[in-house]
Length: 373
Image (cartoon, rainbow, N blue to C red; front, side, top):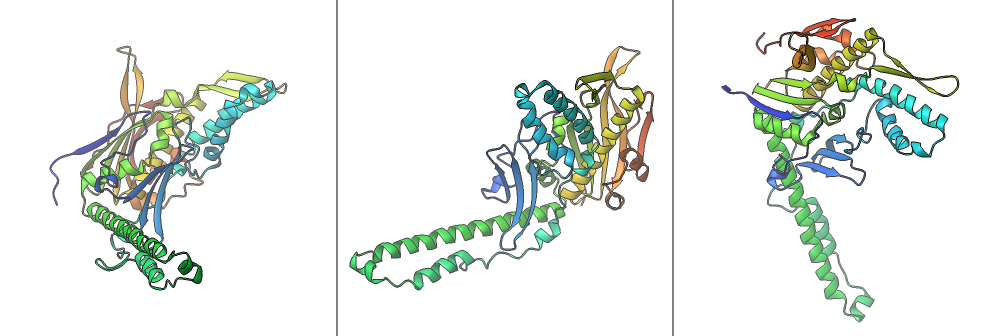
C-alpha cells in the first residue's frame, strides 16, 4: 500500500480536545467509542466489546486546573486534585496552613513534572477487537430479547390480575419489554459492528481513522495543563511523527519555595543548574509519555518525536521556536524499560536521538531526525 501524501492533525497549546460530532463513535450514530462527561467534569472514552465483558478505557479530568480525576497512577498527580480543592479554601485557613499548602503545591508540581511519563493509558488490542465474535447471530433474537420473550411466554395471570382485569395490561407491558430488549440488542450489535470496523481500518492502515481515534481518546489531554501543543503527522501507517511545544518557560519554576522554622514561605532564585536539570527531565518525560500513549493506542511500530521550545536569539533580539530534542523510538525498545525507576534524561541513550544539553546553559538547537534516517 503506497501513500504519496502527508496527513497531519494539530492540537493547539493549552487547548483540550472536544470530541467531534463526526468522530468515529458518533459519526455512525452509535456508541462505538463511548464518550461521557460526569457532573465532576471527568470525561471517559471507552471501547467496549458487546457480549464479551472486555473494555478499554481512557479517562481525563475536568477543565479546571489539573486533571485531578483522570485516574492517575502516580501519587503526585492524585494528590493534585486534593491540593486544588484546598487551594480554593486557603482564604479560610490560618497563615501557617496557607503557607504549608503553598509549599506543598510547589513541591507537588515539581514531582508531577518528573512523573509525566508514568501517566500512560492502557494498551488497546485492536487485533483482539477485530476478531471479536458478534454478540449474537444477525437476524435472530439477541440475548436480551430472548430473555424478554421467555418472560412473556411464561406469564400466567394471577387471581388478582383476573379480578381487576389487569391481564391485558400486563401482557402489553411484557410485549413492550420485548421491543425495548430488541432495541438494546440491536444497539449492542451495532456497537460491535462499528468497533470491529474501526479496528479493521486501523489494522489496514487507514490514516483518517488513526486521527479520529486520537480525537476520541484524547490521550495527551492532561499535558495541555502544562501548555503543550501537539501536531501529529502520518505518511504511512506504521510510523508517526509528532511535534510538541514544551513551553518550558511556563512549566519549570525559576524560584524555590521552602517553609522556614517559623512557618514562613521562603522564596529564592533556583540555581541555574537545577533549573536546567528540571527542564531536561520535563522534556524527556514528555517524550516518553507521548511515545507510550501513541504506541499503546495505535498499531505503530515507530514514533519520531520533536520537542520544540522558544528561545531568545541574541543576534536578532527575538524569541524563536527551535528543536531542543528529536527522538526516534521503536515499540520493542520502549517496552523493555522500567518506567518506575528510570531517569528520563538518561533513557534517551536507548534511542536514536539528537540533543545538545549543557547543565549551565540548557538546551541548544538540534536538527530533526528524519523518518528515513
